[in-house]
Image 1 (cartoon, rainbow, N blue to C red):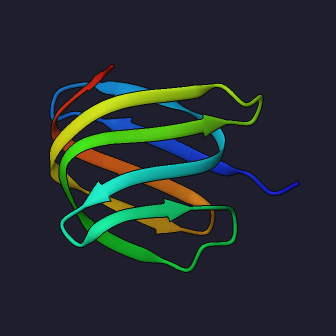
Image 2: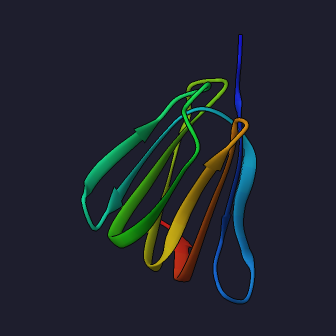
Image 3: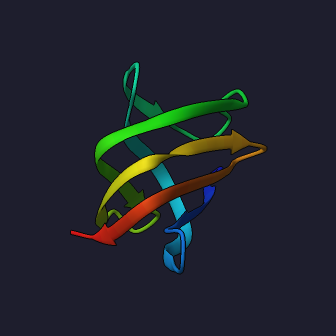
Length: 86
């Protein structure tokens, strides 16, 4: 089963990193869902939740604002000015 390598970082520290099977984040264009095999994308984050569903089915939720989301080769990087686990 394919998986995503995920890193959620704030301006001054890493908030969460690990392997996941799904990401849902709020962007300036609306919510976006990321699954393994997703095409490369760069999106601007809107203030809101980033929900990471881990490989074992747990949901990790972070509040993030003023940043971006990048997807390439099953690697998801979420960088925000402010981010913290909810």
